[in-house]
Image 1 (cartoon, rainbow, N blue to C red):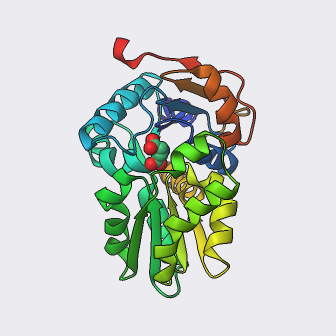
Image 2 (tube, helix red, strand yellow):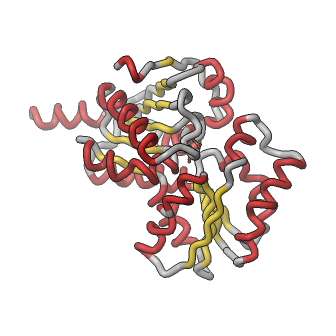
Amino acid sequence: MQEKIKLASLKNKPIGIFDSGFGGLTVMSAISKALPAENLIYFGDTAHVPYGSKSRDAVIKFSKDIAAFLLKNDIKLLVIACNTASAFALTALKKSLPVAVIGVIEPGAKAAVKNTKNRKIGIIGTEGTVSSASYLKAVKKISKARVFQQACPLFVPLVEEGWNKGEITQAVVKTYLTPLLKKNIDSLVLGCTHYPLLKDLLAKTAGKNVSLIDSATATANEVKEALLKKDLLSNAKKAALKFYVSDNPEKFKKIGSKFFCKKINKVKKICLEKM
Ligand code: DGL
């Protein structure tokens, strides 16, 4: 009986999700759609964004501080909803945390391998993600597919400024994708949480022979499987969604609502240094 009560309270603990800023909200949105009964806590490290051009050590430190904050909020599982943080900090967090940790890279790599017919996969991401070669390693672990990578450092600022379409963004997209398209890829992994907002332009430029792989949905499925396996799926009647940032909550509300595809009404600023 006591065990049953303990499991019931464990089930309704929240899932912690973090990213360097807004991008991870695309992953949170996919999790919320796949698992509407789950209580979710999101942390956007808006004081340190972008992670994509930071060093491995800096990203590991930020990630550990955020994980400590989310653990204080009694999470049952942690999702690193940022490709750069998944590339640099997944191993360190898996080793040091008492809860399961899921990153976005393995789910994205698995989805690409499942999709490719000609075994030529393109990866686009931040400089950090591409230089870590994490997608490449994740694909190599499970398949003989060839992987072609391209860092797209201008995409994040364009998306943050709301430049999701227009001539300039179109020209940047074409410049970055052309070398990959010349390799005849049939699957393109959006290896950065900001890129789903460029989906229309990316799809148009890549053409109908290339499928876009968004790791948000694949990650949400992985979260579902992990909770099912541990019998930890929530049975809450109404899920609570909470949002925290390290800077500028008002900007997060405004821009974050676009990433989350739903209005975000309440965002609290947390100073991790003071915790
Ligand atoms: N969220 C980051 C990622 O998925 C992109 C933004 C950044 O550079 O911090 O890699």
